[in-house]
Image 1 (tube, rainbow, N blue to C red):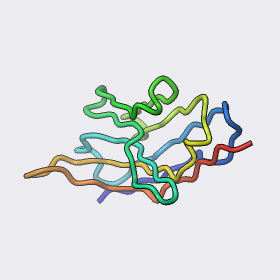
Image 2 (image 1 turned 90 degrees about the vertical axis):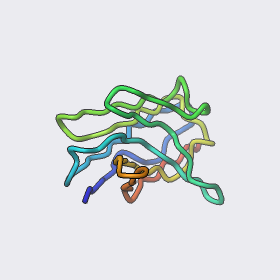
Image 3 (image 1 turned 45 degrees about the vertical axis):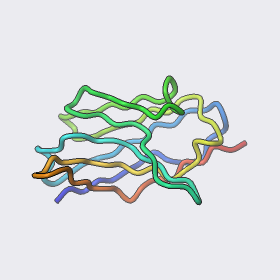
Image 4 (image 1 turned 180 degrees about the vertical axis):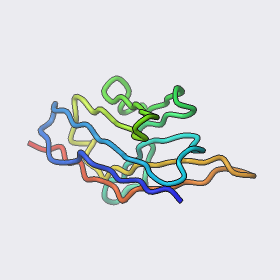
Length: 119
């Protein structure tokens, strides 16, 4: 079992910045990848950023150049630095931890944190 607890969401004006953090606990030694997903009202959950094997990152096109994901293995955290925020970044953001299992992957999810970008 893995527990994921997010923090750092809130209300910010367009052009502002926020930093999301996710603390992982439990059976974390075999986590393959961690990432951030978001879901806006009426939309499907989508990948925002992901880091695998500690170094390989990928980002949604809509956030490239504005968001940066990082992982601290010593502290068992993954963070998402979000700059130049836009109203369309408004969503509930979820932390994800992914394990490799026979035949595929297994995902754990946090409860999420709300990010609202509005003037």
